[in-house]
Image (cartoon, rainbow, N blue to C red):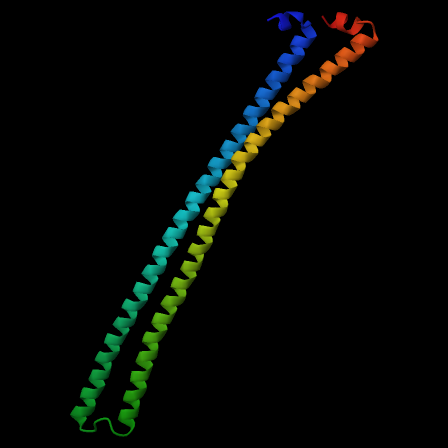
Length: 190
């Protein structure tokens, strides 16, 4: 209390202004950093959700391709069975051109089923790659959230130190000019 009583009005105003400036600067830095951290955390959660969804879609793409391939093979078996039955009913059997056509149809049917599975696998791989990218983005966003918090505290410290430095600089000037002019500066400010 005795220290405050010994301070002039100018010194009290300078000290109060420096303290208020430090508090506002620190609050602003921390608030801004918290908002940025929350934004980055939300982006991280969104990216992780997208990764999970892409993984699920990749699994579904593989399952759909397997089901479509199986359906294609069943349809091909039915069609080939009809060709075989017709050839048997005509009495020609699978000799000659009928047999060659039957073998070509069987090969084409198998290629169709393989293409269905292959395209499904390509789709699933693309979705899995997207999921990996989303997972990586989620990790980057988490790191950015952490960095935002750290920068907020650094900014708060910087605001406090800057205000303290400014206050001390002003005090040094007041003391210098007050001493140099025989105390006139200090007397005119009180």
